Image 1 (cartoon, helix red, strand yellow):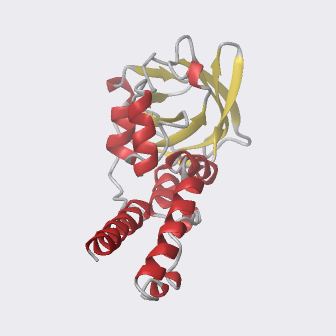
Image 2 (cartoon, helix red, strand yellow):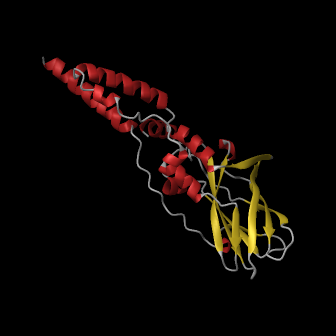
Image 3 (cartoon, rainbow, N blue to C red):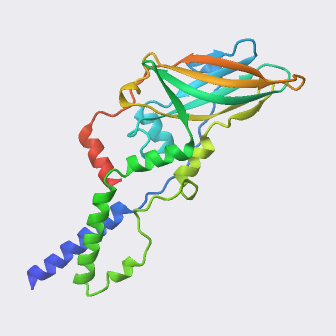
Length: 255
């Protein structure tokens, strides 16, 4: 009798442990303040214009976790770059980004749209989703048997293992909200900015000898056509990946 009761208690605790660790954690969006380009370590002035571009790379685990939480960006080598624009031109100009690339070790890596970033990050945050799902349903079956059918109530609840769409996820919506708007209006003294996201190989995340290339067009009110521009900005090196393999494995399973 004692062993039977101990078995049921152990099984019950195990089941609830998996239920709790499998549930989706809450995500709270945090503001990302902008700094004038001249106050940033990485900045440049666009030739023949009064437009300055500043770059704030989020290329360390601490910076990524502080703003986006532990949601897989750092683990999957997603590099968020905060781009800031400032204009000293007295006339209003339309600034349209056509494309953005990072050049590293002779290879070009284009920017990634927020929805694709969300898909990559979700898979990285849940690397053991198949294992956890198997253990979850195995424990649920045993719990149902031991409790004489009480566990069947849980079967009708939504599964915690299905990937929600970006629009249904606070994290997905925040990635889109913080993304750089490719078509902005710049006025004298105005400050605009947002994030460009890049998926890089692990070996290139140090950003050593890497450059950001922006292809864009600038159109002023009295101009008949926009002027095409290209600016190349050297990026500051930084350490991105946490090399503690055991910590990565534990975090990946518990998240």
